[in-house]
Each structure stands twice: as structure tokens, then as C-alpha cells.
Length: 348
Image (cartoon, rainbow, N blue to C red; front, side):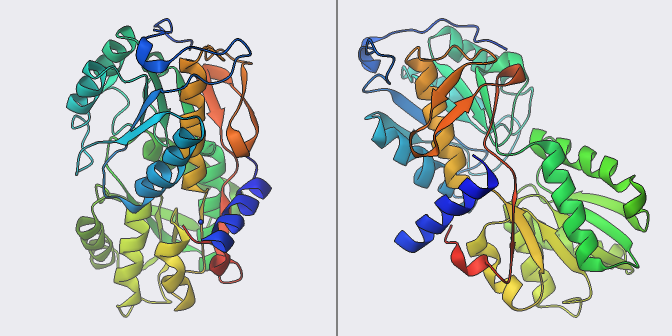
């Protein structure tokens, strides 16, 4: 999906409401019979395993994206997972899904290594594994649905905080999710690379803290940043839980309008903070599209339409055609910037 497609799909939703695999295709009776023309098998069991359940971001990606896709290709959808985002919490859920004969496991990894053993056992049992949002090591899954490139995410966040603070620059900090989150760490490293460019010479990264994708802890970490760094000019929070919690803290404090905030958030979370001046702009993709694409990719694998090799192509319903890239990665598209001029057009 391209940025334009993201806008089109999200606006429509707003107006209407809205490595190669190690295991061979199991072809079990539960997953039906593959059509001779390469279409998706009927009755596929597709399970989504987010970093944590009851998280607004994953509720959107899974239940408003993945579930819609599974219903379209007449599969059986489920979502399960831990209530807290921890590196090892997902293992027992993977084991259970494998024992239940799940055909497709779509997982957002809390750690790139911790769940690898369980995932590979599930693959040996016949499941196709698709990571989305946050990846494992490539050898632990069949495909990774990447919401955007690390470079793209890093660039937009550094640009947004720079624009918000202004030409004088100053000290900035990062409020991340968990310390082991694969995607967060990749983005942070790329943000450091971006900050080394001459045009951002007046910005100084002074701290990185972790809110563990917990609202209250993220709120407290934002509060702690300001106590520890009284000259702080901006906060970047590349996590939907963190940026919303930081927005809530700043909007009710004397730092409102003085300390700038940006990051990755959903429009519904961030509208109030944009409108009250706490946030000038933030970025994201459509998480519903991410889950939707993950479901179609997993079903295409389980149906033998693709093998997960570089160059494989498949159709993902309303999102159109996608191509598997290097290391079994499928790219959703570019991040999109939300601001006061457009945030009301979106509802997710």
C-alpha cells in the first residue's frame, strides 16, 4: 500500500463508519482443499497474537483488519495473547495455537529471539507464521508484514520533532515501548542515524526511556523525563500507547506548548491533543490495513499460492497486489502525517 492508498482507504473507513518457509504446506482437512486456480483455501484457521490484547492499536489491526480479511476468504478468525507486553509471554499462546491445528499464526513479536523456538515448532506442525508490526529473526517465520521501512519511520519522526521545535533545536528524548521490542529498537537506531545529519545538528538526544506499552507507566516515564531534563524541548514516542500517555501528561501540565511531542499514534487517540495544541503533527499507517494484509499473506502461504520467496506476488483483497521482498518481507507502505488540517478525516 502506498501513502495515497492509505489515505483513500482510511478516508473511506471514516466516511462509512471505518527466508523461505522451513515447513511444507500441511494441507490438513481443516483448511479445505486448494482451488486449482490458486485461490485461497476455505476454512483456514487464522489466529492473531498481538504484543498484548486490549491495546487500541492491536484491536484495530486484528479485529478491524485481520478479522475482515479472514471473513472475506471464509476462514475462521481468532485473537489471543497476553495482557502485558513481555518478551516471553507469547510462548504459551503459540504452543496452544499449534496444538489446536491453527493454519496461520500472525504474531507481533515482543522479542526477536524469545518466541523463535515456539514458532519453529508450530511451523513443523504445519502452521504458516506471519509476523506483523514487530518481527522475529527471519529464520523463525515465513513472512514479515512491515508497516513501513525503519528508515521511513525514523525520517518522519525526526522531521516532525524538528519542525515542531523550530530552528533553535534543543534537547529531545524518546519514550519507547519495551526495551526488547524489535521494531522499536530498529526505529530508534535509525533515528540516531538521522539525527547525525547536518540539518539536525541542533537537536540533541539526551535520554531513552521505556513505558512497556503500559499507559500508566508511559505517563510516569513522560513525567520523569521532564523532571530529569528541565531543558527538554521535545519527546518522540514511536508507540501508540506511549504517545497518547505522553500527550495526556503534557496537555495537563505547564509544559503544554513548551515541550513538543510527536510519534506514532492513531487519529482517535491523538485528535484531542492536536486540537488543544499539545501536538502539532504525528505519523502512522492504517493499522487495520496492516492486519488485513497479514491475514491475506498468511492465507496465501497456507493455500500454496506463494512460498514466501523473494519475488512471489499475491493479491490482498481490496489492497491489491503485493510482492515479497528480501528476507521474506512484504511492505505495506509509507507512513502518513496527521495534523490539524486532516486528523478529523480519519476514524481509527
